[in-house]
Length: 148
Length: 92
Image (cartoon, rainbow over all chains, first blue to last red; front, side, top):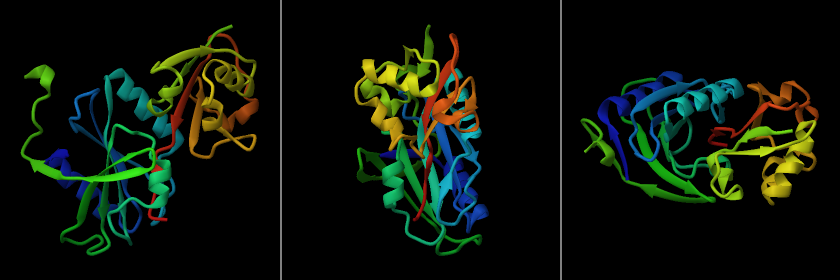
């Protein structure tokens, strides 16, 4: 199950709507091993495409160095589909490189840049196997075990 | 000669869980052969048909190797190498 706080959820949806029809992409990172989606980072889609996304290689290195310094890891890796459903494509599955992350797909195909509901779904993608999981939106993510 | 190579999570199955390993080589190609000697199978995840895989990024001292000669990129003692899978995908 993915637990995500309302503010972060709204920020991901807003990012997807703003960038539509281009695919929006980014991460929500958190302390290593915590599974807490705490810090939202919008990334630039270097491909600038409605059907593909890729982080710029320099941005990617910067992001991972920053996570390393802060003892963080990717908790949510999200992107939007602007023309298709919020389900991982073959490309998404083949390129999924973080077995510990929740892969979130937001589809903006219904309302584009405008107000209105979006599909927001989360998956585990491990060794090419996709497993959908429940998304629970909370006021604040539950404290990690170490701090409780 | 020792060059530290940072290994991404998805490739740590080849390094016994280690986040960083030492390897050596005068260029990236030789370095990858040195990695392969100690961590069999890892080379195939980095190279395809003699070229660096499209969705694998390797950096030498923070420079993307694609801008400094790719597999021919020169290495020297004390350099730091980082391997990161691309974060990419899309509807098609």
